Length: 258
Ligand SMILES: Nc1ncnc2c1ncn2[C@@H]1O[C@H](COP(=O)(O)OP(=O)(O)OP(=O)(O)O)[C@@H](O)[C@H]1O
Ligand SMILES: [Mg+2]
Image 1 (spheres, helix red, strand yellow):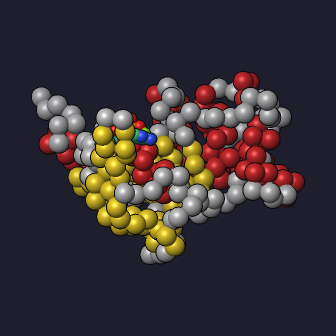
Image 2 (tube, rainbow, N blue to C red):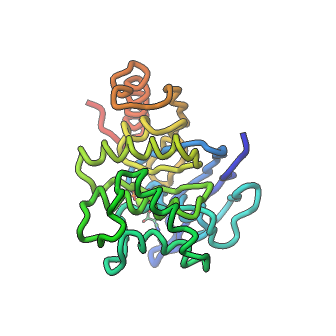
């Protein structure tokens, strides 16, 4: 398997007015081409920090990060990022929100139009291209964000709690849609979530983090067959992986054991 993204013994401390804060310690992980990695861990364990460093917006205090074998030394443009809130521009149509990516990269926006329309179709938003963000629901807006992250065909997709602001039902639907998109495009994905079930359902491997300073408590291969379906959550394997992660969180004091 070709490595898309590699963290080699990465540690990160932030300097603050009250002294240094150690966010992350000895994070070591190689993400293969087309691999779906979920990261679960308590608030403040350095998950967003990992994505900032992978995209070249922050740098490790120790260790190395490389994308396709090249050390990350400046902001990486060959990736797609989806944040917790959709950050769409209210004054631009849905289509223009998606085409902002090629525009910002100085590419011909008209050349990307057909692909933008294809992506909208793929996420079930065919015919919405001329609408404005305020005319869409939260789940629809987040689907537009995913299209925007995919329009320039990045090999790597970074997602920081993309469904955190959605209600439970929309969220479950978005998880299945993301899985479908991944099956069709086979991007390498790093998916950050607080939701253990969501993490397991989507991933090839789940990275379970300890409280700050965040370290890897365990890397769990899900070994669940594809395609994943809501019924996958009823299988013995799924239930046992979820339980294993809960127990790890209990062991590290993230969840209280009853
Ligand atoms: N720019 C910064 N300056 C100082 N400290 C920071 C900065 N960014 C993050 N931190 C600290 O580093 C730690 C990790 O932050 P980070 O945002 O990576 O956590 P997280 O795992 O994404 O948490 P959450 O699940 O709440 O989003 C936190 O203690 C935070 O206060
Ligand atoms: Mg975060």
